[in-house]
Amino acid sequence: MVTLTKSKTEKTTRGIRDLLGKEVYVQEAWCKTGSNNVTMETESLKPGYYFLSVTSTSGVITRKITKR
Image 1 (cartoon, rainbow, N blue to C red):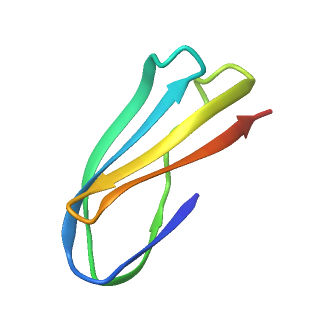
Image 2: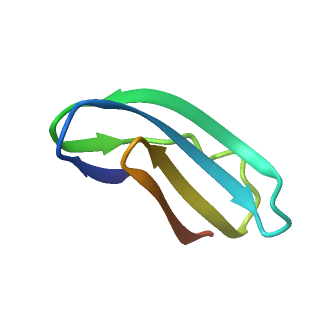
């Protein structure tokens, strides 16, 4: 689960890419003002390192994650 804090209600795109840059998961959803708990289906991902990106009109945030 990922927690996003937004200053305004806006549409977001959440994506997970492998180390080669291949998109393995993508989801679009609206986030409301304040704190938003977001669950992403990662059961199908193989163990390893990935990059999680959240894109909105406010910009892009990317973090490295590990699937065990």
